[in-house]
Length: 69
Image (tube, rainbow, N blue to C red; front, side):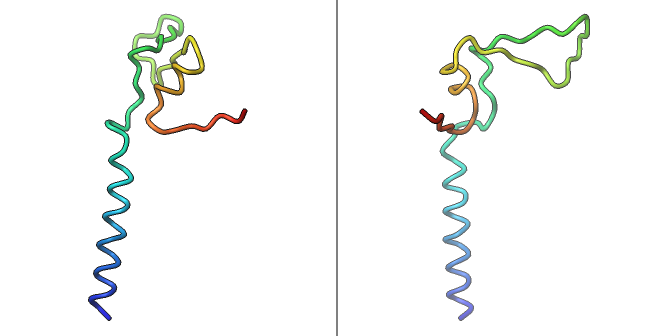
């Protein structure tokens, strides 16, 4: 019984970690986004970004988004 629980736990953790590895970095890709300047503040936290198109915005997020059509 303990062996079955151990094997199920190992398989479950393996599936969880394999699913998390699909995205390379898990961070927002800001290379094609434009940072929005807010007043004269130098340490904007959080930073605000603008995307020129919907496709660029969807490519920037570290997860998949299904847009309803």
